[in-house]
Length: 255
Image 1 (cartoon, helix red, strand yellow):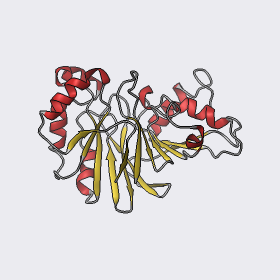
Image 2: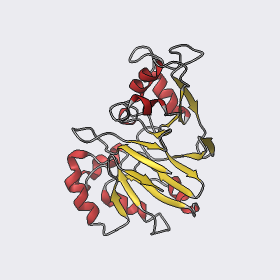
Image 3: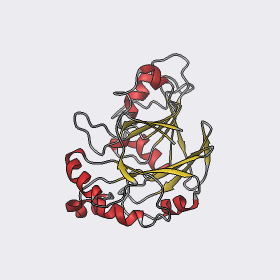
Image 4: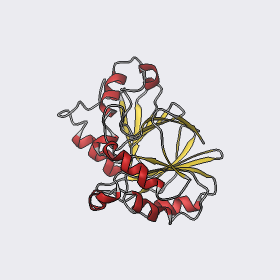
């Protein structure tokens, strides 16, 4: 599978875009940076979006993507997938005809720009030839990570999480796991803030990686807060784990 990193940061500053990962041009994982990166043609190819949770940095470009798609002729709706509490939150607080038009009924109810699809955590589903499983993680709001599998390739994306358990059970059961995308948002000096907000520091990350039984799997860090990047780089180097690297915005990865 090929992943294009549209954005990989936990905050937005010039040159730093929010988390959004495009798989094979058709499946989007989170929607923090889409319309500011992709051409209208590439936007039109997106068929499914996997949302980890309803915080604005992970859905920021979803309204604009819907508006762009609503104006095209005979365009199939984008299927927006997540667990029911996440879908309900997005519909109630964003696509509610107050903050933004309800594009699950526009341009028409019969041919909408978006179709919201609730999925059951822990259950495999088929999406564009991939097998996808949502796995609950530990965050301030209902949230999941995703295990995405096709052929001999399987990746795991934690989304936003503090210390958690179930997703490591999934990782340890997957003999074909090729990579883990996981967050490390705050430096160690902000441990209290990370704990309260459901995020990780490098020191907390070390504890999470001890739950992983294998040591040969590449770990790509995402959701770094741009204002702390210098500290985060230093503290990650201090872990002494060569398998842990920062994911690079704009880069294509093949797994």
